[in-house]
Image (cartoon, rainbow, N blue to C red; front, side, top):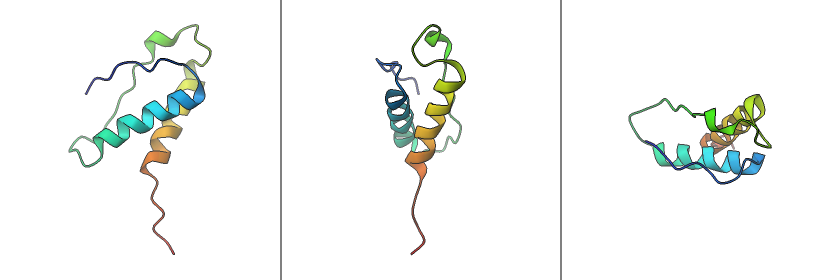
Length: 68
């Protein structure tokens, strides 16, 4: 699945974009996602920080509170 790049390089935009990708893949047979970060050189959020926010968004989207 290829998605259009998100318009902003803020932490919230990265987390929202990753959550959107994971939401679209929920229930799909594929269990692997790759984010291409090559176009973010010189952006306000880049490199390891961008990758961390993408991972956080993906992790939060899959969180389920199942203990009561």
